[in-house]
Every structure is written in structure tokens, then in C-alpha cells.
Amino acid sequence: MKNHSHLILRFMIQIGILSTVMLSLIIPSATSFSNNFDANMKTKIASSVAKTERREEERSRVPRATCRKCYRPPTLCVCQSLPNKPIRTSTSVLILQHPNERRRKSLSTTPLVDLVLEKCTVKVGYNFTPDQVDLVQEFFAKGRKPLLLFPGEDSITLDKGDGQEDRINRVDDITLCQLQQEEQLLILIDGTWPEAKRMCLQSPEIVDNCIKVQFQSESESIYDSLRTEPNKHCLSTLECCARALAYLEPSEDLAERVNEYLIGSMQCMVDKRIELKSKNPEPRFNRPATKIYEKNKRRFEIKKELFDK
Image (cartoon, rainbow, N blue to C red):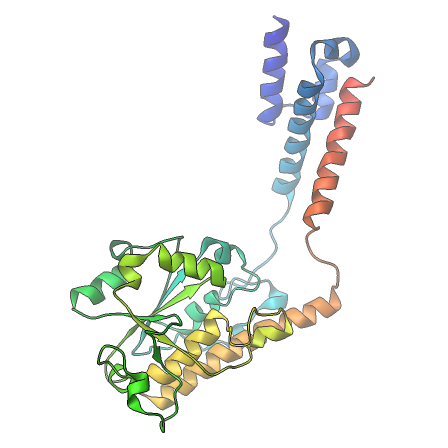
């Protein structure tokens, strides 16, 4: 019966019914009852109680306010830099986003692209097949090949000067000039370089049936003021999108307008983060090591309170 008792108590602790105070009332003589527990079991019980306390604290927190349009806190709102309504381009943009990038909400530029462009679709995953993405299926059904922004020897260079020989921009008898004459589907990979390469390797049905495009000239990223990019030519997903549309969109006026809002919204986001950082140098969340220390400290306190009387 004693074994059943401590199992029931442990279960009640795990589902949050018992708090530390209630447990002390149920077990008035914790010292005598604790003789039935080995050290490992005591640690498990203390951990369960501590976890319940953390969950109760998290549930009691009032979620911070966010803007209804850009879904950012008021201090980081970028609505002032966004168009009144998303801009419709001739080029459709498909962003294949790695789950890790999805979690980097504070610095991710993909949400901004979605707010600026009407024809923008975001899919999250580690790998993709055509039947998972309607846009790709529709393009394949028309006998067309989407454009994939990814560097390589078989990629069409978008930023070659007009004076360059056209053969430099020719891949499989397709030139940049021909790409500009038709509506395109531009696919962007959103993730770190290792993540993007892995996603391409794991999505051969899409990647092998795309026309790859790239940039060759170096350019500085707006992100440089916040974080260091791996290489000088590395740009954010938003900057890559803006730069590609500048070459693919048949209307120069529309391309300039899109570029203005895309780059403007990102610059606004970066400026507000720098401003906020200068006002609040301390991070909003504790570092992992600090959080682990606090969790262990509370667990030891509960263990002592319950079993060391």
C-alpha cells in the first residue's frame, strides 16, 4: 500500500493538483514518510513540484501586447514602413522556411516579405515535394519551371551588366531577358547556409526541376549592424527577394516601389531593435545557463523542504 501511496502522490504532483504546501499538509511527518524514497525518487518528486510551480507562473503571466498588423510589440512595430495594402507583382514568391528560422521571430525578415507582397506564400518544413506546394504543382502542370535562388555553376546570373556577353547569362538556352518576359514563380530558401543546403538536398523533386538563379556582385546587408553574416555576399531573405524582383519585374516603377517598401521595412526593424537595445541592454530572457541554475536551485530548495526536516 505504501508503494501505491507514493505513486498516487507523485502522479498528483505531475498533473499539478498538489503544490508544495498541500504536500506538506498531506504528509505532516515528511521525515518518516521519506524513508520509503530513495535519492532518485526524491529528486523526481522535487522536480515535478518545481515544474508545476513554473507552469503556474507561466499561465499567470499576461501576454505582452502586439500590433494586429505586423504582430510585433509596440516598441518594435514596423507598420509605419509598410504599404497600405500588399503590393501585387507579376512574380509570385514562394519562401520555403526551415523550422529553426521560423522560431527566430525577432530577427526573421520573412514576415515582412509576406506583409509587403500580395503574391507571397510561406511554407515551413525540412523538405518539400511538389504535391505539398500548390504553387509548384500548378507551375509544373503548365509545363513551366520555377526559379530557385541558389548559387551554382548552372545558375543564371541576374546581376550581370548589360555590356556582358549574353552567353554568360544563358543556361539551357534560357536567358535573363527571356525570364523577364513571362510571369515567374521565385522560390527562396529561408535558413542558414547549412540548413538551406540540407533542404535542397532533401527536396530533389522540386530543386531538380527549377531554373537556378544567383547574384555574383557583393553587397552589404542591413543586418551587418546587428549581426555578422558568414560572408560578404550573404543577404537576408528579404534583401534577396527585393534584389531578385528588381531584375525579374518587367515594370521598373513597380520594382522600385517594391524595393522601397521591402528594404524600408527591414531598415525600420533593424533601427528599432538597435534603439531598444540601447535603452535596455539587459536581455528580456535569461541566458540558458542562468535558467538551468535557477531551475536546479529551486529543485534543491523543494527537496530540502520536503525531505530534510
